[in-house]
Length: 339
Image 1 (tube, rainbow, N blue to C red):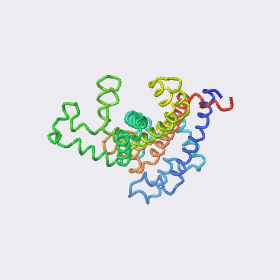
Image 2: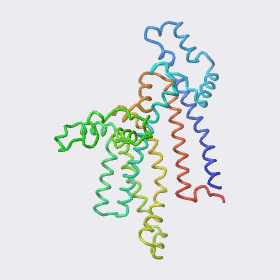
Image 3: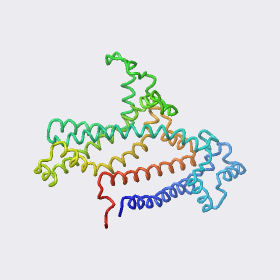
């Protein structure tokens, strides 16, 4: 099986996953114990039969369940996502997602980069120097980072950065980080310019550090274990016996093979970071898709919740497909079964 056929097969298998996840979302929202029509009405209108019937018609709930399901699925597949009920009442959902999603993707990107470059690097460093002081310090640091909940670390970081500068002996202003600029949404409209890129990055870095902290410790631990396993393989001893230089031995034989078990960890953590951004975005005031999901859920805007769940499902499947692509790049043997 060629690489292209392998990826095409994985893409085809993702279609039923999207259908099943979307169908479950529809069933939970529209066939579950919560009545969407009553959420649309004010307290005084709930007992008004005419108002309730009008709300049912507005939501399409006066249709047979099968017809409503088909219409809802068709709207999602064509990205005709309609308008909100309660949150930003009457706003176009497509426009809301295009406005909120880039901020979450920007936050998630930096969270993944921080987790990968710090966590994997520390794991590989500890694995190459196993049972040394450096190994013990790196391992202990990974355990400590892994143990700290995101919401607690977010609050502690905000408290630390908002402490008067005289306690630390320097002023954050010299780094271009005003104390009132630690929270809020990045301006994604100027991301294409150098100043806009730096401003948007600076805005999300504290939140990205918090969001990537748990994954950082996990990837460090897995990376260390992977290096220790690869380092003791027979082909590494054979390469040493052939006189392969230390640099080539590390980069071509040890690190590349140690990356294989890290691929599913990194890609899985990537979605967890994006999904876990709900609380972090709330604490740091970043108006991303996680914040929008939180507001829609708490306000009872159930169709918007269902639409955002559909976006999360697409993001999950997309990350899994990216994982399969990385597998074929790092390990060319993937996808060649049966040839």
